[in-house]
Image 1 (cartoon, rainbow, N blue to C red):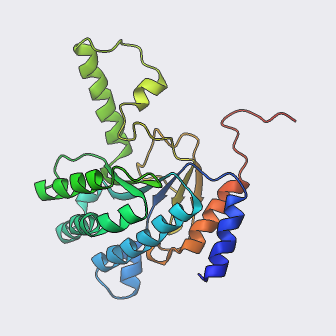
Image 2 (cartoon, rainbow, N blue to C red; image 1 turned 45 degrees about the horizontal axis):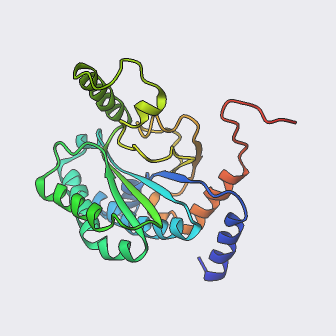
Length: 249
C-alpha cells in the first residue's frame, strides 16, 4: 500500500470511533503454501511477516488492544513436524522481536495454557512479557495453546478451588468470573476478524465475543494486507452496535 493511500485510510478510520480491542483468527497459511507447492510451515512463516505488518498498522490506528489466535488447544492434533515448526516460530518471534516491539511501544502478553510447553519456550514467553511490560502504545496478546472452552473450564475449576478454600462466596457475577479468565484486565473484543473466508469462531474467545462484531475476509492470511485490515476497521465503524437494546429515535 502506498504511503499516501495508507495515510488516507488511517485518517478515515481516526475520524470515527476506533475499536478498543481487535482480535484476529489468521486462517489460511497452509492453503497459501499448498497453492505454491511449499510445505505448510512456509505458509506459517509467511504469516509471521503479515502479522508484523498488521501489528504496526494497529499501532498506527491507535487500537489499544490487539489479539492474535496463534495456536489452539486442538492444533496439537496436527502432524508432529508442523506442530514443532509452529512452536519454533513462536520462540523465534518472541526472541527476535523484543527490541522492535519495545521501540514501537508494543507490550507482549501470551494467553493460554502453558502446561505442555517446553521450558525453553516458557522462558522465551516470560522474557518477552517482562522486557515489554513497560510499553503502553499497544497491548498485543498472542493466544497460544488457547481454547475458549479450556479457558472457561480453567476459570470454573479456579472458582471451585476458591470456594473450597473459603476465599470467595458461592455467587459470582460476570465481572467476578471475567477476572478469572486468561484475558483478565482486558476489554472484550469489539471486532473479530477472520481471514480465508471462513465463518466460525473455532473455539476462540467464546465468553468475550458475546457482543463482538465479526468480519470475514476472503484473503488467505499471508495475503492479508494493512489495507485489508483498514477495510475491516471501516466495516466495523459502519455497524450499528446496540448490545441487545435499541437506540432512541
